[in-house]
Amino acid sequence: MARAMSSTPAKVEAKRTDIRHISELDGAGLYFLAKIEGPAQIDACRERMRREIMLVDSLDYEGATPILLDMNRVNSAGLWQKKLPYQMTFWTAQVSGWISLPLVFSLALARPFNAYGVTTDVPEPEDLQTMLEVGMWTWNWMEPPLGTVSFFLLCMQFAREASNNMGAKTPVMRHKEYLATQLQQAFPTYNKDIVRDYAMSTAFDDDEDDIKQDIQLHNESSAAIKH
Image (tube, rainbow, N blue to C red; front, side, top):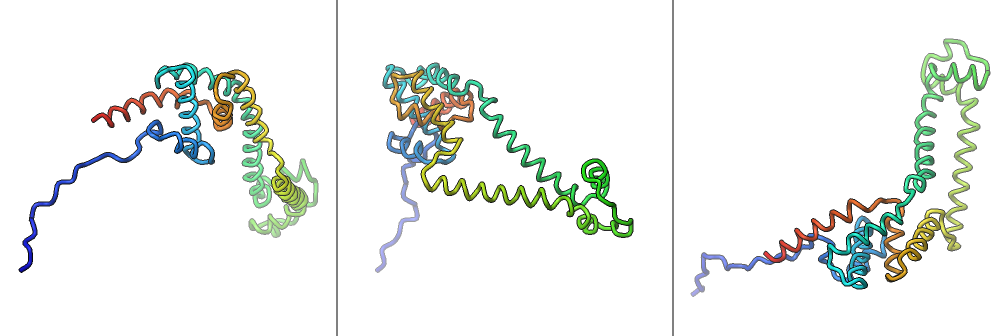
């Protein structure tokens, strides 16, 4: 005879196993996240730096915040100047890309551009009735710069790839390593590898808001664990 099964489900004790804040990770997990590029790298490097300050200076989690903020101020000094070359490159590429479309296909823009910058013969009106006909005309002067710039960028891309294969450092990496050296010299009492990782991960970021927010998130996480 089959054994009667209980209609009352077994009680399972609930236990929280998810990680709510990076401060709950152990040292091995933080080290792994700090060494690989990803969305958690900055958080991991900041947490490692905070724990190093706590260890060296015998401080609690919140007590390490002022020193961490000082390190951030040193590392982010002149941040707008550091970002300026990359922002200029970004906006130059954006503007150049978008403006090339009307320069090729817009008769309203092509006429004055030709009058002041090219001075080539203008086709008859019946040969400029469509965007493609306009493009056939403007391509006479747009092809040399667009083709040359495209070929130049392609060559530079191959050159950069060859340089990377030979182990050369990119300008961004050299900049990050310069910041790391400066921060290591400013705070020599802390582990150089941890300071280096923090400096390089926040090279283009002002970390102040995240440093302060970590206190609140850490306290909320600790309270949840206790309950």
